[in-house]
Image (tube, rainbow, N blue to C red; front, side, top):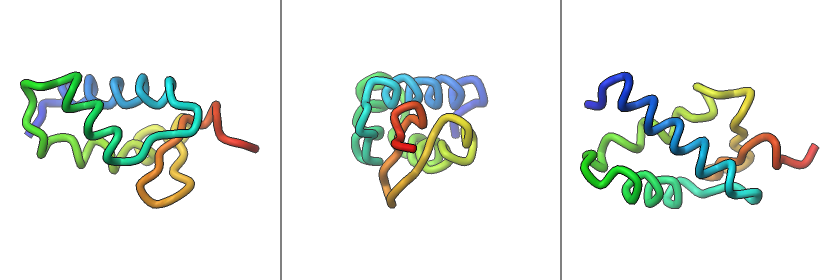
Length: 77
């Protein structure tokens, strides 16, 4: 299991990836991004981080469809 500081690093990386993707990213794209950024981490650590993004950061992340995450700055009002 990832430590709190490690989990926070993973969450911050997800936010960075989403900030560079105006159309949002699918769950699998976020997984690949985390795996590439943190090759030393166990891949089974990432699913709980990704799934909880919109709960952890409701003011920043929207989940308009199953498996799709988008930075709210890019979401159409």
